[in-house]
Amino acid sequence: MSVQPAATAACPCCGTQTDLVPGPSYTPCTCCGHRWRSPQAATLPGYYQNLVARNDPQAPWFRRKIVDRLQALSSLLEHGGVARVLEVGCAEGDLGAAVKARFALEYEGVELSRDRELAGHKLDRVFPTPAGQIEAAPYQLIASFHVLEHIAQPAQELAAWSRLLAADGRILVEVPNRSGHPLLVDDQNPEHLHQFSTASLTALLARCGFDCQALSTGHYESPVYPDSIRVLAQRRLAADDQRSQLLARFRDGFGGPFVVYGIGGDFLNYIAPLAEALQIQALLDSSPGKWGQCIARHVVRAYDPELDGQLPVLVCSIRFGAQIRQHLLELGIGSERIVGLETLYECGT
Ligand SMILES: [Zn+2]
Image 1 (cartoon, rainbow, N blue to C red):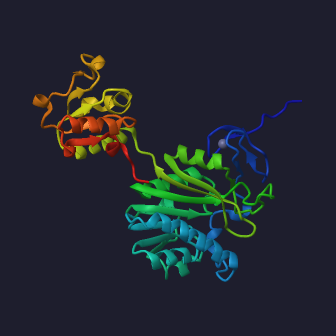
Image 2: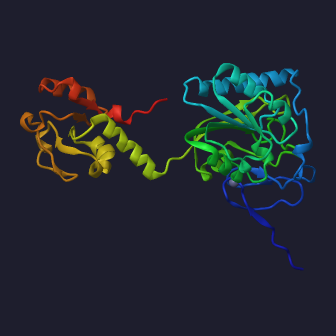
Image 3: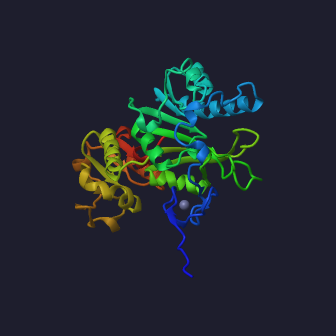
């Protein structure tokens, strides 16, 4: 008797080859803990287009989730810089309407169900098609609550979001945490094709070119889905873009040639890899033991007011920056010429 080998498929989140569980049951990924299944007969193409009144706006849990999501979006919007928001799965548009009441921005939505008609009266624009079919100007923020678990190919959906996102844009994604309820093993909701874990959602985002900025669990959708994962992510910069943005900080910080003071570990870590592209005129140190060493095509030497007297000075130590700055002031170097390594590397929070 021959035994048929089990059919396998790649995990839609981490890509690990996994033996498929036949039938409507979820297949568990042994690597990232994701569980997924094929689209159910009840949710074939066209299914969502016929639905209407998916939420009861009078229900207390509806208000609770809108308030929670409004708070999350507000914390991202209150610092400015966001002119256009897209909410994938905007339902009847109540969250968008609440955001627009607080912030002057364009808020557009994607909604396949007939709830899009109501949303059309509240939002700036509502697309009745999947995000993959949208042509629109870039969005600085794409938000999506409890949508990704409905989509058979979540990686394709994230690719569509990535295409619609501004270069410095971010996505805010929320899905049920596993079944969405801590006491429920399996979610039998036929609309749900995925049970994400924190590991599987972050693996999926990473494979789709996103870096997570924040992840939290326990977010409320409804009494039966009280536990959701929420992730804030941005598109990962290519290595060339990382480098060119870092070099731009040096150009903005110095506007021309400069000298480096303090040739230690921080210099080797944070300046030497960029040295060929920087306008470094000299490497300086107060320690005689370092004088004469040749590093990054410069010979380390002491400060010389005749040679270095006009140039800005980069203080190249995070740990000893304050002492070096004091030493430079004692050498008669004006404070306006002194630039700390931290001012070039620090990022806003
Ligand atoms: Zn996996």
